Length: 229
Image: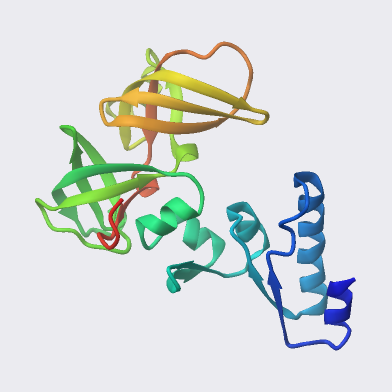
């Protein structure tokens, strides 16, 4: 009813301050879809305030992430999620693994997307640096989204870059915890790099504790050193 009263005068901008916060999950998703359709039908600019990451990604054409009254980053949902401007943004929007390592080499060749090689616990990792160009010897923070990690049995040679796999990075791991959440499986895996969180589609069956994790260079982002961890 309140939304109808606000729309009847056809405002140029409509502010919605956490309008779905009191709804349960199923109704919230349904109303979220209706709001998106309504915005498209009316063409009115909606400014939508929310602390819900999924809601922000699902509803927005552009997102502004704020911290302490300051704007940390403005961009499309994919820009915010895939290329965060800081560790705060990376933590606030979605889940992420963070690694700390030392830069051992840098490439500015176009085909490698301004990439670097970073040593983490004496393991060399290929990463990209789209927002920040580190120097050799610098200590940097890497971000990898949990769903970008590919999981295979430890004995599977198909992921090894040495035998022609498209995977740029590879490490071994042991599953120490696995949580079944309906359509997805969230696991904590102990690796030579440290403990990594992995998100996969759940397929049932037994969980193999000894695994390989692989990921592409473009999914491993060097973050600017602006706010620490």
